[in-house]
Length: 493
Image (cartoon, rainbow, N blue to C red; front, side, top):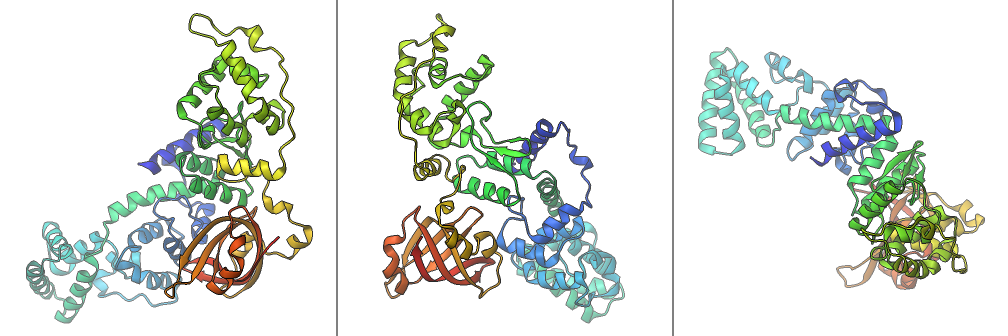
């Protein structure tokens, strides 16, 4: 249901940004960009195809047809997944396609001789042993429930029926053994096709309307800053600009603005949803941009114009629309709150336009340092928008590093020097009781996990603080399909 909602959000987003009504029934099922995306395993955010193992299976199978997506959706389950390599090799022509019997070719040709679907099991029983489809379904249920007594009865019935149909008894035994093996985990093709329609639609939209795709994913993930950061980071890697939140331009959800993604106000941490609902209503009723924070305070009313509600918006950059430094805006917040309380409108007394538009002075304050500005953005949004702390590192250090985007694509064993801000530190103890850590490092293009073993952890423990800029020298190690760095040296930069 979540993915159906995402599809609907993307469709509405495309309508508003491209003035185009997307008809899912007319989406082409031979779109080159979509299959290129699937073949790369570029499936973050795509229903059923997101896991590291599924991405690897896609890269191995290299789908070229919709039915390949159906097959991988059914194969990637306990039991059948052991046959993914064989399916892939047969598809590429690197392994001979062997049929249990030539009579079964029409049933198994589509899946290169590999039994994948429950419907195939039922049809084999019908063609080979003369079962009615009702009897074939009883066979399927008996095997999937592992009812040994019924399975033995069905085995005898299958073998007898196959021999009667003219098949060799040896072949009948072999085929029934295959059925027993696969029926326990077999997936209904009808179900796999239904799943794959959603998978394909999302893959098509990601390949052809990436900004709308990521905006909808982020909107569906509000409340999960880590997931939003992952999606926006991937969007930036594709060259999509991420625009900061804006008092006048942002909606509650993420939107697409001239090909860029505009941050949604609802995703700013610490801002209550009832307050945002009131803010959006006031903005709509006013119809024109607010000229100052004082004017906004009057319209919102003192009850809701509080430090708790407004400070996160300032820290996130949403009030940059007023053309003032965020330090000045934070310093002025208390005065704006007093102004709102003094001229608070009511249901009987509406907003006094002359009072609201008064040109009151902002409280002068020292501009925020870049470090403070970025820390506030991280606090409010979960990541950096204006810049990245790595940009403060000397050009000499930057020239010697491997960007994390590229490091995460290197082969196992490659030596790297990477720089970044520490995003997360997870300390644990080895079996010997020694402390070690897994550190997530982030630069402007990506993230990577660095393993800090006990002998190094003891020397660099004081540097393992969130936000600390460090350099790491080590070796790429591939584990469970993901790259990480086996750290040899770690130092402050």
